[in-house]
Image (cartoon, rainbow, N blue to C red; front, side):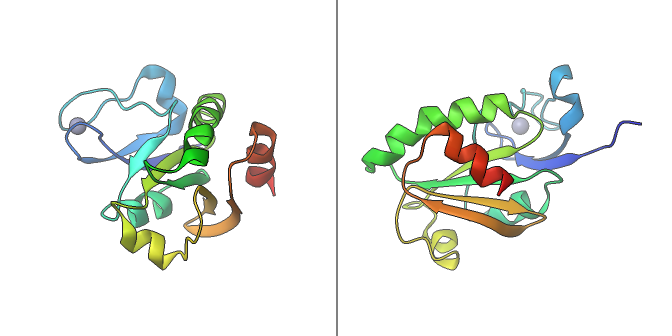
Length: 144
Ligand SMILES: [Zn+2]
């Protein structure tokens, strides 16, 4: 029997929160409100507003990249994360949080250096890494 793992994601177009079944990603989920596609093969953007809801509303692990525009190592990390998100579509929700625009969440989690990557399972932090890392390290972080 297929299980029904779901994630909560905010539509990047109209900001409506959607519950999406990860097994049905191949069918191309769409936003319930604006009908635009919800793409989970790339990192999704999270903010102070939806951060808690996204990490606690996910039946799969969520890997969050805490980054900022001015941060060089974050730029190195970006394509690695894109690749990782694509490879793990449906198994891991990859999210990015801009620490300049969402200082509240970054502060609550005690983010001191960026990029910082945190893996959340059932809403709880399970692994953390600060500094840019290669793809293999992301896999280890997920499984660690
Ligand atoms: Zn929408």
